[in-house]
Length: 192
Image (cartoon, rainbow, N blue to C red):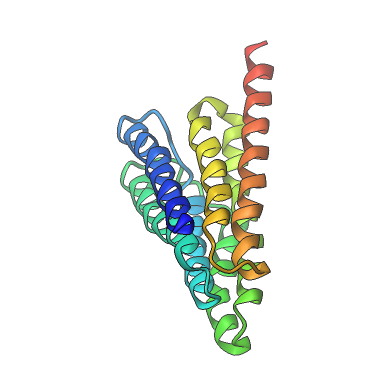
């Protein structure tokens, strides 16, 4: 019963994080990098499927919902002509993310997919870090803090703990918090 409670809290935090972020995009205040969000959305949804395959249960649902919303943000970034600068490195991250499904099929082991996708997802921060380093005020840090908290609660909601189910949310928690620190640092440097 408490697993479902934690899952519901994590889902609520997902919406708390994403709704203001989406509103900010629609108001042209936040300009997400399209390839980061496309990569994150694809990766997150596939990790959700891997977590389900490894009996992650209720703890996987916040990740699945996040994947769908993240793909929607990539769509908004494209429609709003946000940061659509796409580098070779961006393509590499995206192609690596897309190769994970065939790898899962070939290995029949969701752990390898989660390891690859977690790596790709964390590396997917590259374009966003690059953009935020130059334009640190175009990012909403509250979003990343809430997502970090959501991931910790999603871990508590997992019905089965294994590297397959825990690795992705744990790594993203760390990545989000490091991103917040980088942006705070850049804002202070530019304000000085």
